[in-house]
Amino acid sequence: MQTIDIRHILSLEPVIDEYALGADFLLGAVSGKRVEKSEAILKMLKYPVRFDGYILFFLRKGHFSLDVNLNTYDIHENSLLMVVPGNIVKLSAYKEDHIGDAELLFALVSKEFLSSIRFDFNNVFQDTIRMWKNPCITLQGEELELAEDYFRLTRKVLSSRQTNKKEILGSLLTSFTYVTLDVWTRQLASARSEESQTSARVNQVFERFIELVTEYHNQERGMAFYADKLCLTPKYLSKLVKLSSGRSAPDWIDSFVILEAKNLLKYSDKPIKEIVYLLNFPNQSVFYKFFKAHTGLTPSEYRKG
Image (cartoon, rainbow, N blue to C red; front, side, top):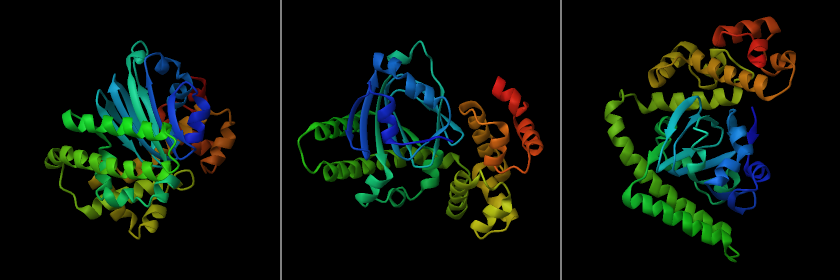
């Protein structure tokens, strides 16, 4: 699966109204004709990609759907979406005749930049499993005005002659994260009462399981491997994953493998024999049976289609 970073984005799309700090930080806005001209990015996002860093999307105007880690989120006016490193992102749907009406603000932050300012994202968002399930929030009233003030101030800093931009941006990013945390926590409070009450331990196991699957699904598809990494029995791990997500652990693993396989078949010109090797299947026959069982098509049929 293709992994992209800030350098990649800058090389793809010169029409973006961007304010960058090297390959560490990129603040951008696209609207009107600029959205229509962003063909390279739109085309790239039609396929699943990983961004090697943190992303904040804020949609001022318009509507589209985005897949994050195989879940689809409806992004509407005044939506703020947060994506963390390693997440798989795909633009699932948008109306091409209305794409020019969209107005999108975004901030891309490298992992190195966040590490350099000593900001522990996971520690601040201690309930990260809930963020994983609810990465999109809606800003209103005062919080909306505050977010726009942060955007304008960040843009001014990036376009200024300040010599210590990195430190200033680090402080702004830290404070804005606390603002979004407050909004996210309040909006999540009502959703909590509707969710089945599962323990923090169950959610932590599921979160770690997904991290491992994201990293190792090309090499390992057996439950024993992931259970061993988590110091659990396969049966108990399966129970916890099902309890937390409503889906079985093998189903999650297979979903990531199928997504990777589809991406390689559609996005690359690699021979199927090589894809079988890359995904660590013992032979083409096993891969064909696995792929057809999950998609209803053989790999060749899927690629031709």
